[in-house]
Image (cartoon, rainbow, N blue to C red; front, top):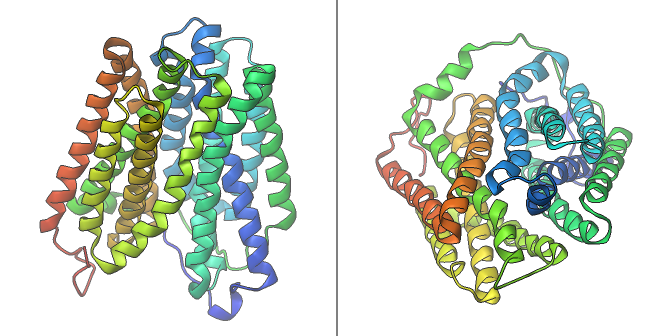
Length: 406
């Protein structure tokens, strides 16, 4: 996706009414889509019990959605070049909410998986168009703040979906929990439609496949895509199967308490901007190495049977993941000749890892328990660290006239 910026006098600046409406609308959009995408994560033990599934089988409720999202995001980013940013985002939000309600009334697990796969396609429409919309409609001096609020909506949505489902499930069962998330998502879609300013600077462009190939010819970008895959692969496994462990002996926690533990996501809300500031002070590769070490320390603490140490470990793992993801995504955009396409490709790899890694982690958990999960996720984290070390010798991208600070 190649984005052409509009003249600065035609864009929204921080403090203007239009800028506030954009931030409110995209915050609501990010909240809605990521609530839906990950709200079933604390429900995996419920699915396993109700539908008589293994942990790996139950994890398909997440894997099919993130897999469909991964496969859809690049085609939809191209479609937004022709169809427009606003129509795609509106369609994405309403389809996502209505499908969530359908998930709540699914008669069996197979139908539930079909609806979840369709949701993955629907969810992909928002990230496929949102960043391009911001680049076209927001003044460059205000863009960073707008992007930060959008990503904040994403992370808070991921947390809120888990917490709400955990609490409502204890009161009325998982179907009510999923339905409540659907109603909240629909409300966010209506808010988005009501307040989001129409595109003023979008110009339809032909769909070109050639720029996508360039995203795979740069060895530095390929390594960054792999880093994103390893990051997400390890993170999704921890959150998928921690609930099974905490609801069993010796912890014996309720579904509501397990959902509340997802408040650990706030560690990522804090670590992301911190990582950005550290990149400015030091370098991307140094910060990336540090995030891997923080995650490894957290994995070690989570082996304990002391709940306090498990929670501290989860906070470290979450902080390390979000900080590493922040560094990798920023590095992709800074390095790529076609940042839009490169970003979409990174997200493809990222969500594909969520789909595959989540299910593979279930097999590991069934065979070797939490120790197996720890070894598996530590191996992925060490692989990410090795790739980060290899970036020490990364040559500047050919398009640059001066070397990129890494």
